[in-house]
Length: 197
Image 1 (cartoon, rainbow, N blue to C red):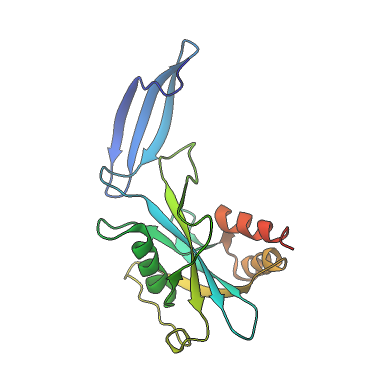
Image 2: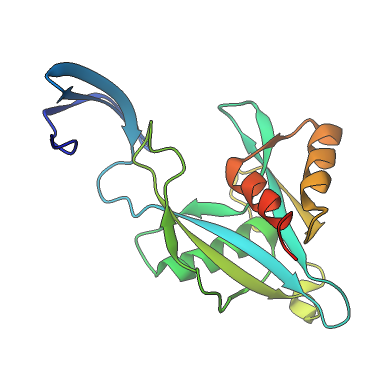
């Protein structure tokens, strides 16, 4: 059986940022209807940035943000991210997003797994993002007093966290103190730090 066989796709609602659809298909002779959302045609996906601040004389730190997310009506702890514009490479878009959301000036890091395309919720969406790791020179004058360049509808708070095995505990403590939610990508990253020697 070919699970990729599409029987019919029905547009239910067409919004500015999302399209809500029904997918009509068959599995083992049984007709199914699957509800899902996708970005409008021409959308290039998103970019998720893992920003690491490096210093000469102290341990590296991780930048995370608390981003107000209207669907959950709360701030959510997550990595900086954004939609990829029609102009520029994904990397250029990522550097722009980190500058806008945090104020920091970064460079693309030389990491083995930079540029991997990921899917956060394939059960309900066709959404995809490219993850990139960026380095920030914490000793550079340009990064001493970073100033955000937020759009009028953005509400973002920047935090610096310690890398390593304490990261998960620090995230939990911050979420509890501020009544924040935690994004899955950030949480799994923090759990991965538990296995870091």
